[in-house]
Length: 132
Image (cartoon, rainbow, N blue to C red; front, side, top):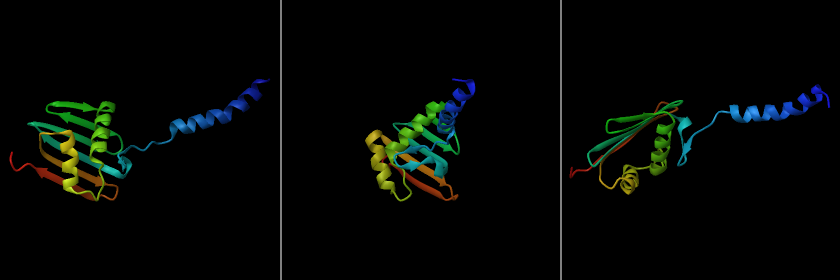
């Protein structure tokens, strides 16, 4: 087998592999597509500690717990996890988010969820425990 034959046989395989690895990926978390979101901020206070999850299109992820800040891949995992907990959708209610968060954060004191979609519309939900 000549070198030309070998290269000719390998080219289709290499092109397919290149396309698979070079294709853009879309992040989904609980049915929520981050690619349709320009900016996302979720802040909760539980037992006196503030937690904040941030996403800015296309690839900025940040998670803060108290004074600790995490960025990059580790923060992306945290953002994906909170999105799975909340099942963020534009038509969900404050009460639905409150119930979902209370399952994970038993001593929830407050939350604030804000995101801007691809059409530059701002969506917000918030709650504060009146007993605090």
